Structure formats: C-alpha cells, structure tokens
Length: 258
Ligand SMILES: [Zn+2]
Image (cartoon, rainbow, N blue to C red; front, side):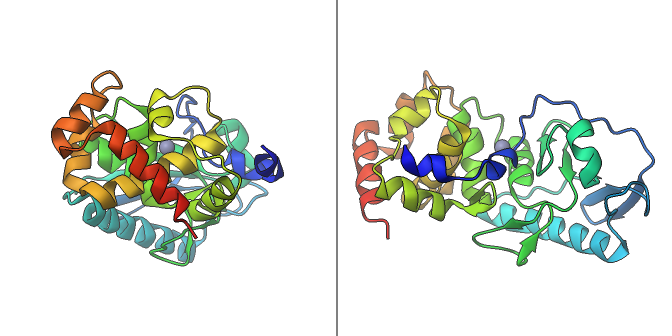
C-alpha cells in the first residue's frame, strides 16, 4: 500500500461526512439568481475573507451551470431552488465540521460549503470551481432518480460526475492504483466493506463512470436505487448482462488504462 501512504492527508479532508449538522446562525448576505440562493458572510465578518460581490456572482453562475451540466449527464430536468451556505474558512471547522469542502442535505436541497476551497476538476465547467459538482450531483440524483441505498451508487455517481477526489482528478488516483495493482472489483465495491474513503471514492467514481459509458445512463438510473441485496439481480435484469461478466469486463478495462 505504498502508493496510498504517499498521498498527503490534506486531500482526505475535503469530503466531509453528512452526519455533521452545520451551524447556520447569521449574519448572512443572501443573493439569488435562477435556481441558486447563496448565503455568504458580510465583508469583515471574520479574519478570513468573505466572498466579495465578484466572487458571489461567479459562484452563483458556476452553480447554475453545474445544474445544467448534471441535467445533461443524467438526462433529467431538475429545476428546483438550491440554497448554498458558504462559510468563511476560519469558521468552517467548528460550524461545518471540515476545513475544506462541505456536504449537502439532499432532502432540503441545501449545500453547506467552505469558501476558498479550490477544486481542480477533470472536466471543468469553469477552470476553477468554488463549490464544484459533487454535492449538487447528490441533490439532483436524489430529487430526480431517488435515494440510492448503496454507498456504491450514491457516492459513485457523485464522484463520476465531479471527476475528483480531494484535490486530485480521479484519473490521477486511478493511475496510481492501477500501476500498483490495487484495483477494487465492482463486487468488493458493492459489498462496501471497510475500504478507506481515499480508496472507495476514486474507485467507485471511476467504476460508475465506466458503467454509464458501457450501459447508458438510463439503465444506470434504474439500478441506482436498488439495495445491495437486490443489486445483482436488478443489474442482470436491466442490462441483460451477468454481474460476473460485467465484473470481469471492468477489471479488464482497468488494465487498458494509460
Ligand atoms: Zn458524497
């Protein structure tokens, strides 16, 4: 597991667990455009920068475009309002539970995020994202497809869409895993054992992206809400392929990575 040990711990902190309850006590500046309502801290609220009016405009534009992109990828027409609470960097640890990144409440269509997180996306809508695609992918998937009962589908789809884990592109992570023979099979990903996030997130994203490429988004949407007990059966019924053969095809695909 040499390769894994070389990954800086910093990147592990980006995706926080959804169990933390954000403290949304004001004051906030509220700005709305199209589907996004953004809550930001007033200027000089804390020693960390608050977003200025230029940043506010960019973030709102970015997230409206993120909705458009995800609608295209998932072939859906999500058009609800999403609230984004953007905490300043120096209050994020206590009020958000993470210094970088954030999390969402997909039942309330809310994202909680730290301002200043710079995510380099593999396929950016804009070069640098403020909030990125991962949390919005969770919100749209939950609203338009349903609640994914497996971690593989829930996180896999969001990771496939956002294309990064931590601050690195998933392809970079996979490059390391493939070179070092550390590929986790779809079978193991579905079993959701004790794989650490730094293994599970990039690999579930890479696998789900391949799954969409191979079988098409509509079939993956049908499988998305299956629980782990029914997953194999549903997969075989919907795709007409055996789970075993898909498992082998994916592992073979990984060997063609370059
Ligand atoms: Zn997630």
